[in-house]
Image (cartoon, rainbow, N blue to C red):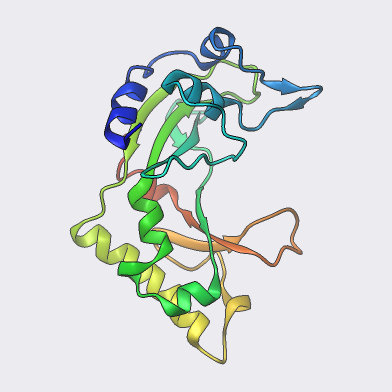
Length: 203
């Protein structure tokens, strides 16, 4: 299924409650007593008629599916619950490639995002808010390129390197530790809420 067709089909889910869809498609939310982390993505795959992919971020060749949660703050305003992981940082690859040929740009151009509102617990109602794709051009493209170049230049700097990458870096895209615990040595590119807000309208 091509990206444009998938987006149009996914947009038909906007406003629907995802637990009801999970029951319709026989998608299990729990595995034993633990939450099946990929359950929301499995619902979307079933809706698209695509066999369930065991990967948390299914890759469909020309596009990739991501699901991100939105939460309601105490004042009733909608906000992003978390940043969105884009792709792992391979220091050798980043050092070798300019932004135009980067894995980061390729991933951003492939991602289809399904945003959904969530409660404090997985069993609370969750409604599909919007379906978007990222369109980088003009000032936004230049700003994301600058974030990438900051990471690349840090890696290329013999006095800094991989361990100098920190989540404080980057205006739209940040390099951050990925994995369990503070001892994790891997890093990934994450989209900050201000980047997501360029495409997902919360008001």
